[in-house]
Image 1 (cartoon, helix red, strand yellow):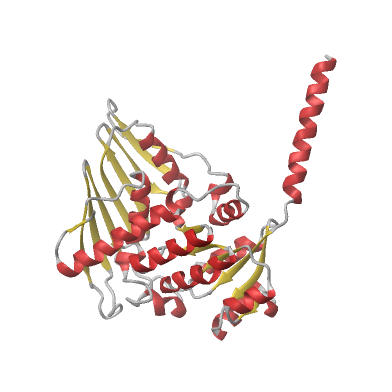
Image 2: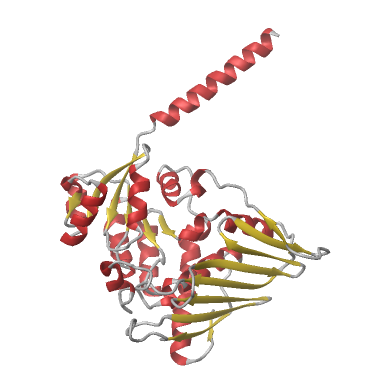
Length: 365
């Protein structure tokens, strides 16, 4: 009994030391680069609610955005800087989160990589493959981590579907159908600052084909273990040229793999918001109609049944937890957030735009 009590005491002491060491970790100092992306409205309150991270500064020059965010989130004027150089001269930053245009992602990485500062940006990785390769080169040269944040990355249903597929419960994957989008960024009330670049073919790289095509390209690449398709064929349309005169608002992308096909339906014309996916294997299927629900049917079953996915905790629970774990060296980026998966996704998007432009199927090496 004495030995048992001693073992319990030692175990309790170890737990207490571990808990104390977690509490004693200094907060990670993060800066926000740009505020024109409306997703910053969701990121800032998440950041302010936590004790393991501190907002070190914000780089923004648009006075309207500065005033709006300052008022809404009670931000001290001293947090704002006119440039990356000014931020770096006055703060000790460990990571930055980019909330500007997609075109600016390359510049952000190239500015902060030499200072060994990790970068997270909102999807997609870049406007084209040239920018994506420049980002890759800077990350490798200076040994930083680059993370791409997709809302769908943190869906419990997507993790559960991935696990079902990779446990071989459905047989080999034969077809994937991904639906992403809404009834249009202007229609759902995106801010003017956001719309100005989201609907610009240079600053965003395209319309719906990029805005929502990237979700499917990223997720399917992860599902296929990083494998690139052998070919890409895409059709884009301007159904609402009066609202979006510069970019497409409708896109369908078909990916061909040696033994499977994937279809990405990206649209600013859905009647409702959609971010759902269907995966069909040789002996069964799983669909993810919403973040917290699966519908599964396997060989021998007469009908599909609903499955509630387990709650996701730890680094994979949300983008901020993931970023902090990466900065602290607790994990290395993998899956949908990783640079490697997003390089392949960018290759798919480049091919999709070229296919839509030429009307031809694009073969990938």
